[in-house]
Image 1 (cartoon, rainbow, N blue to C red):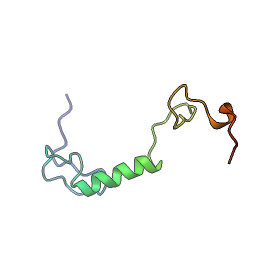
Image 2: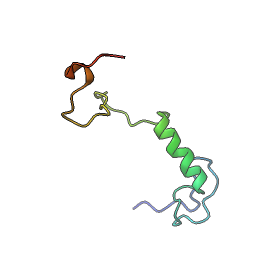
Image 3: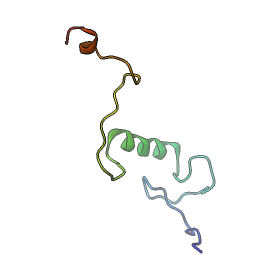
Length: 73
């Protein structure tokens, strides 16, 4: 069985995590948690896999401007 690392470190800054069971875990602070989130949202981190079609911002079944006969901008 794997034992927990005796001194967990923050995945963002690599500093020791004082309270490994605290709210921002596994990060050392809320700041490091937000830095990690920004990397995911910005595309710096990604889960490998087959590329998929980009989802549109429109709800499924909604017609685009060109399908409704509107003009393109």
